[in-house]
Length: 246
Image (cartoon, rainbow, N blue to C red; front, side):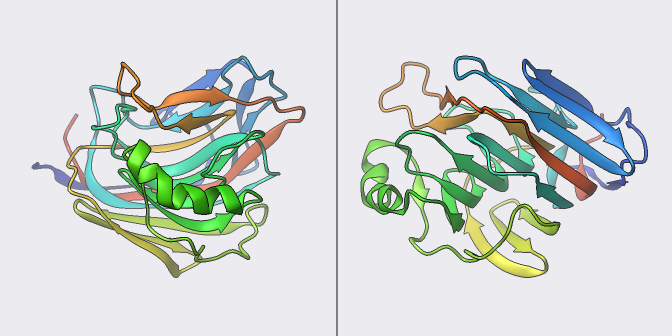
């Protein structure tokens, strides 16, 4: 795909019109004191709640490849998901092509409980939460039940504290991607999938379950109850790479 070199940086001194701002149900987004504050909850289990900023739509994805960097922290560990990086805005199993860091945690049995680097259907654990036994079972079973590949049973930075300020970097180079936390490489993944993508940051109350014969061939939301408000605070975002002209 052809495009032009482009660079953006947002230090969140004000609410920029560059981003598309999305709020679903029990969520909020604020920009104050140089910090983007994205919050979710308290929320009931039956309702999807989400705070998200991105720079592309389903049929208008700007990035061909690039580097995404952000300095951020969580205010606590919630039930649901959160993440940041590039995504092609598809949950269809055979088309979805995220290149991002993703947090996943559920109240019930769910194998992918942790913080991961993900490229397409490949996951590398950076932190594993309490359900390590489920994760090890998933390592053997999931490839037979769903098109997910878990790269390793060993997390690459188990001691990482997500509630402290950390700098995350995704280097997306089409067929391969490298992931860094505070300048240290934590994952390197490959994929044959090709797509354009958008820069994306979100926090919500849902994990995404493998379809096991789903008629829509998509990953489904499994929404979680959260009794308290949890936020993802972003100090800055910088994206540069090849971008298609709007």
